[in-house]
Image: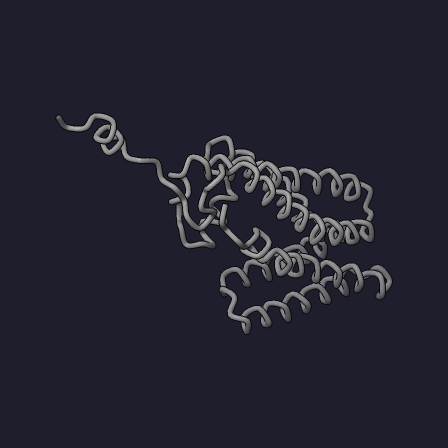
Length: 223
């Protein structure tokens, strides 16, 4: 396979990890510094998320993606303020990871692996990669790595959430974001490289099978 860049380079995993963890660090820090005040934690988290969003827009990121990220932090803060439980700031993360694990698993079963959709979208291929049987198979196998990532998060977050361990939730949120995302990107890239056949041109160049008519013409030449 001649494709040079890795999934980490294509998907910019480090940037996503920073976006996901910075507001969480702000919430836990504000909650601790101001005597376990949910209001203070919420304000710090939203302010950091807003500042991060403005910076992303200045960097040329798509406004829709930036707004969705900011909205997620605002909703998480509102839930915690409404319930009066600081651990509820992490409720969206818990549900989103459980839903993501299910969605990725289903996508593999129905042969529309989400890793292929994500990478294909980044490369501007739309769904052309699905016409390449080898690439479709590799994306499906590599997508199981992402399912495992979300399952690990749920397995760690759920007991901490049930026990109301806000600080531990914040620590694990950070620990299971960039390191886990980096590992997931590396392992799924390894799976793709190992499962694509020798000589495959890579992710940017899906190989469509020959049309049946063309194959028939080659195998039965005119006499």
